[in-house]
Length: 333
Image (cartoon, rainbow, N blue to C red; front, side, top):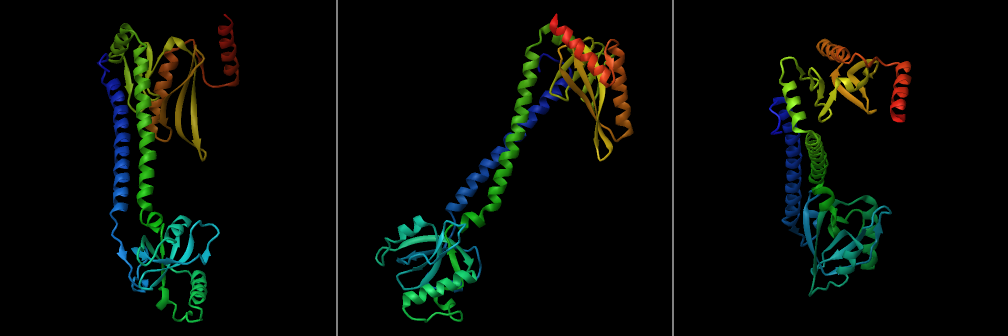
């Protein structure tokens, strides 16, 4: 904003720059957590399970198991693509694992000489899966050796969930990444859009127009309402509430008050201006609950009405019809 000396217009543009950088910083944090999450997944320390996993008492414990033999699936849940399998290491220890079909196909190639390592997290064994596992193991052993009293001696009280690491251990990081990504993108785009709009409107102005606006904003006869982000100069309304708008009083056809009510109470007041180009301009968005805000609002509204003597005042169906006719006549000219 090198062409303007007015401090408020510089501060308004700088505000959009700050908003842009806040969004950028949030996206940088998002990228950091994506990298950290990836690195964390790659550096997980897995406990090698060499016997029945009954000695591991905590769920969500990262474990690994060297598979030398895998038996066909004995159970699965309809809503889940993974299935439950009995797997063995070369010492003959048996463990239950919940695996993807692709993993099972890979493990089918495992042998005692060439075992295949799998990783996952420990999860408590549900009663229904335990029942099916007992039946399957007895079928493999060809005798009813395993039952509800001694099953933990054969395959433990937990199973290995191959996809458990992603589903459980890192959910909070993924949620944080999503929040940072969405929030950062919205804030960055908001700041960038307003910066572009601000610059574009000023570029359309000639040097003479910029000089005149600058002089009027800095004039002793002008008033700046900080809460409304609004200048009332001798000849212009200059609003920063919707990026940057300059509205000459002589261009106003209709001015009226708009109240925003909630639960029967007026929570915000706005002034709507209809100009000769047919556009609506919303200015002076002020809190409708405090006495001071109401006084400021009334002062702004009265000043605009005084400086626009030919404009229609107040909202009514009659004024609405008059404005339609005025704009229609302008279009036909």
